[in-house]
Image 1 (cartoon, rainbow, N blue to C red):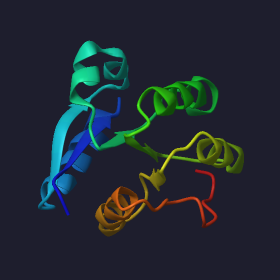
Image 2: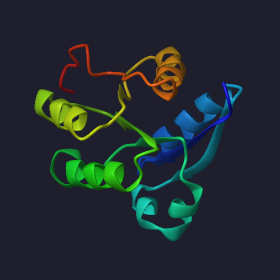
Image 3: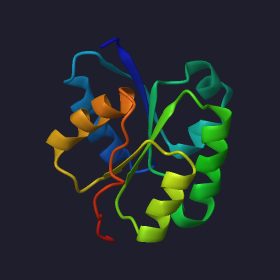
Length: 135
């Protein structure tokens, strides 16, 4: 597998740092940025465009869906993966409809994250086929 670039957008800095450290352990994964969610709207982001964007949307069930829908239209080649603390069945369905490639709960074991991202890069979806309980 070619080197995969990953961007992390998460306003919870401790969670984002832990995720970055986990991904650094995987040969072939390169975290090219780890920033607050507002970084999405910067010119620097437009230049970097990672292969995978791991994002914890702010206000996910309201503005978050609109933001993610816009993003998937603007950057169709970026695999968007929502990394969040909780999910509802409605939000999960909305994410699937707008083309989000993966849904990873922050409560998932660390050993699920890297295989999930590897499968997403190969074209699979992750996190939409099993029931995920609301947090």
